[in-house]
Length: 279
Image (tube, rainbow, N blue to C red; front, top):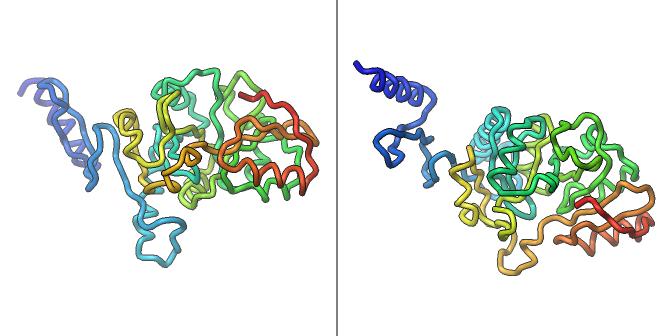
């Protein structure tokens, strides 16, 4: 048997052992291994649809599908891959914030300037204190998180130095989305998070809108349509607020929750508006 045939046979055996099927990549010399999925996906991307919508109760018969998606996403993230995920505002791209190679992959596949920061997604408000130097009352954090906001604060030494090395600040997200909270908690570490689209193009409210990125992703989690999807306001993303200066706040990006966020900051906590320069 020729070395080429032996190599192909080994690849096929390895693929079969982990539940992958061999498919032609369109050339005689190259082949791709695609995970079996009821949904069509581009080579390189496995697509999993979340059962139901919103939170899934532990006793629900759909819980098995929910858990399968979580375990698959955690496995890919721990392997240094980039995964597409639904959030409370837009579809996003997530990777392990501790993995420098994965961070570079996110910038590369989006065509994003490395001078632009990535946010950090966490699973609980308590986790914010590990990765940030918090200078606001705990009640303020709990009033805004989970929610469609990104809170910018001074970063701690716990974060990877290759994550946004040009700034001492970091934006924190805890999306008001059950899957994302479960994912961050199961992963047990900070996730880097950005929107699932090519830079300068429109953000995505369903997985079909960023289908051009699928070949560069390891996994796509389909949580269905996000928001109404009919008005431009649906694509504004989270409201980004600078809370790094005690007693003040700065609006970096108005986003989709500007009025409610500023009302909490000013009326309930007496913070004064100021200029923000994170982005």
